[in-house]
Length: 114
Length: 114
Image 1: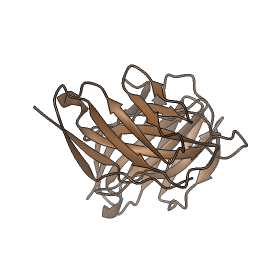
Image 2 (image 1 turned 60 degrees about the horizontal axis):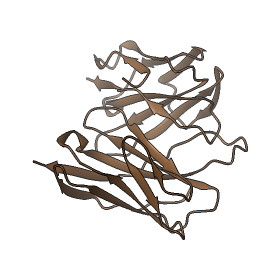
Image 3 (image 1 turned 135 degrees about the vertical axis):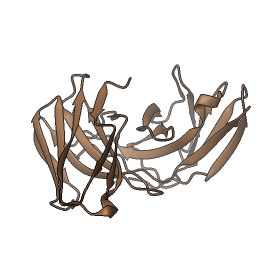
């Protein structure tokens, strides 16, 4: 799976949009971008994933650049409860029999400030 | 509530003890996983079970013994652990154990070995 690069930490004011960047310059055509977050002392929570089109769900939006070498997770109105480590993970989804895996990096610590 | 329940949430055990961690998923999934998260380190995949069969053992020491009696339950039996095994142990599940399936995590079991 391709390697991802994320900033170590970011701050965001409560009520503002939080934009979390991720670089994945070596991504392959059959690799998806996944985002998870981990609130302190809890298990990782699935947020969203996408291949090349922008995606939106009740939690967030995922914007993937046209060349797919980077993406941005957007939390439209950040709250204090969104303070967490956010992980950007790239992985193959070819259904070709490979074991389902998530390889976690160190992620971005998002601190939402009141 | 993620649909993946882990018990106990906290466990303290001596190096000569035998204990077990339990995981139950209510999502109708067929694949289950154990991950380990040590302090200040990324999550590491330990074991993968697909339809009750172990499909991945990520070079885990034999003092960790997994058991998957059915697709809804997963255990991690612990014996003669070392203090460096103290960590957050996370259970997860997905519809199948093949690539292309979103993985959902439980809240984790905090283990302290004294």
